[in-house]
Amino acid sequence: MRRTKKFASLLLALIMVFSLGITAFAEENTHTYEIYQIFTGDYSDGILSNVKWGKNGTGIPGDAVDSSILEKLEAVAGSASDTAQLAVINKYAKLSTAPYTSGTATSYENLPNGYYLVKDQDGTQNTENGFYTLYVVKVVNGTLEFEPKGDVPEAEKKIVEGANKVDVNEASIGDTVNYEITGTLPTNFDDYNTYYYVFTDTLSKGLTYKNDVKVTVGGVDVTKYFYVNAADYSATDGTTIKVGIQDIKALNLLAGVTVTKDSKIVVTYSATLNENAVIAGEGNPNDVKLTYSNDPNNSGTGATTSPGENPDEPSTDHPTGETPKDQVVTYTTELTILKKNDEGKVLPGAEFTLTGDSVNIVLVTAEKFTVDDKGEYWKLKDGTYTTTAPTIGGETDNSEDYANTATKYSKTVEITAKGTGKDETSVVGVVDEGGHVTFTGLGVGTYTITETKTPAGYNTIAPITFTLTFDAGTKAFASNNTAVAVGADNKLDTTIVNEKGATLPETGGMGTTIFYVIGSVLVLGAAVLLIVKRRMRAERQ
Image 1 (cartoon, rainbow, N blue to C red):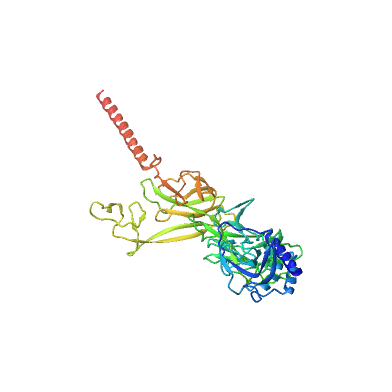
Image 2: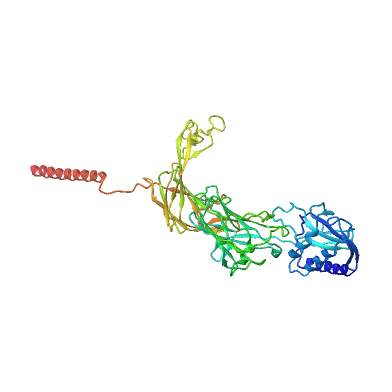
């Protein structure tokens, strides 16, 4: 009877231990639980007597439990951690057998009195934000009710702009974008013996990683203890960076470093917006996910030595979960100039200089059209090109709009990077034969368009200045000058018209000389006539 009372006290103590600090998960339950019957017995006022092996115990079902086992369980009842107590209790649970019952509920009725262990079904939590609950043990008097204990870490990514941390920003090609990733730890971090922790960060092809990762825990630089993969950081199809550690709990063995459930793991690095950047549209995303240990019941034995420097890529045989991806996006835009004369015809050959405080590396785009029987373009009389084939004859005849209805053209696009990316203030572009020049990779700032070469016979336009702004909420660019408008595609467009020079009066030309000659002849003729008349008058007298 003495052993029975002790065991009853033990079980009641365990009830208290495993009920304290339990974290209930979200209302939507994605767990399937397995209930294992370790012991059976007679229940009265919280006391389990006549203790026998249950269906899932390591002894023969129905046989009495040996007193030595009760002593071992009694000895562990005062252990500081749930994990330490479960390490002993698990020795007497045969989890390889079929569970007594299973389901998704957290309450079960009409169970035989006894001592039960509850666990997640293996393989059911290898999902996004998945986690296995710490085993729950309960003394049952017909009804089993429990609250699963478990939690998941989070990974949050931000773009750092001065004192602000944002999800969306803008940049010019050549600009540096600074990133910060903040990772948390689960509230039941102490239930794990080891804890696998790896960030996977993916940059789109428009971002070039600058190989400057830094990792801190509680403000302490621990970068050298983390693995950072040596990937091809100039990859044109994007870059993946892995930053992680085999067992983050091992950092506690380092002097001056403390890792607890409240710790924040902060990763910072930077990237440059490059020539492969997506212009407007969906922008240039950068996302991160965190892979983490998610089964405190299967987490190894724990580290006995501090982690080494510059470790190999971490791996684990223990179950892991993944957080949802957290994404930030950087946007950039472009300016297209269409050059025409006052009759609406394009004027190729004009040269424009774009000056501004956000001009680093700008891509200048020009189109070239070549006669090609297999081409997809036709030339219009105004000098522009179209992919719409001419219609000859009938009510829809539009042949008069075309320079030649029988000649097709193919188009090639030439993109030239202008600027060094180091405090550049201006770039120059030449209008192509289609009348366009495009400056690509512009961020916010004030810009001036100056015509630095004007087609012969036309007047040079006055400089056009505009200020480009960006609304992170709507992800839209805006211009303060209606002459340089932002279209529905989030890109800038402007049409610049050159007028022909006027014919002005001139001096010193042949026309004036002729008047001088005629005038002289008339004066001379008048003088001769005057002399003749005087002689005739004299003879009469």
